[in-house]
Length: 66
Picture 1 (cartoon, rainbow, N blue to C red):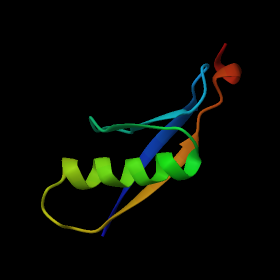
Picture 2 (cartoon, one colour; picture 1 turned 45 degrees about the vertical axis):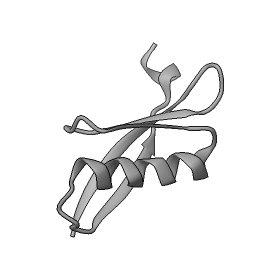
Picture 3 (cartoon, helix red, strand yellow; picture 1 turned 90 degrees about the vertical axis):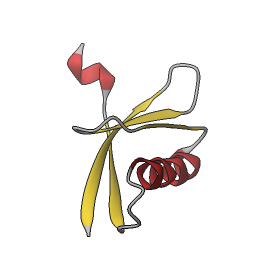
Picture 4 (cartoon, rainbow, N blue to C red; picture 1 turned 180 degrees about the horizontal axis):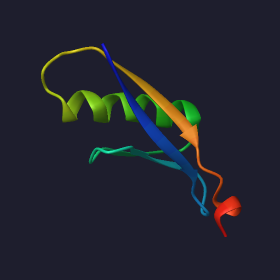
């Protein structure tokens, strides 16, 4: 089993966006539960091999980088 790490940002207009580190995988969600489901679905679609992968998300605080 491998792990896919996502950076999560809160959208200014509401909701959240996640992008996988080092991979072309993205997901959007209305809340954290919705985002978590969509991240898992995006990973399953990206890797169509049926292997189990753990999805981990980390919040990205935009204000600390301004």
